[in-house]
Image 1 (cartoon, rainbow, N blue to C red):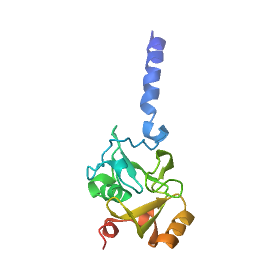
Image 2: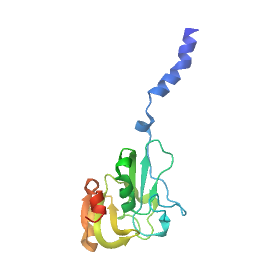
Image 3: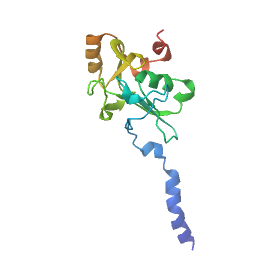
Length: 161
């Protein structure tokens, strides 16, 4: 009888020892025609430029944003920072500025950014995102702006200070 109980409890013990956040692969979610920006409520696909999305601990819904600027403004808020598990942005070197494709989403933390370029996005100055530093440098040389890593973007920069 003891062996039977042990066999019945074994799967439960194994399940409790697994941390799904370590083994789960997180991928960018598609942006649908009627999705609205989590920050401003605007229709995401209606506007040009790179978009973003944030995955949060324990949440099934993925906040999506009409611009990388809005994504950063959300993710950098102190009450949200601890909840963020993954961020995705478009690699603008591989997709169209007017209508970025979902297949171009990349990890925002490894991306490179151009801030202050002449090319505009939905909410003023774009925070253009790129998969490589070379892509960001090329964009910057053509359209101006400064090249930044993920860690160099903060709320002061986004506020224009």
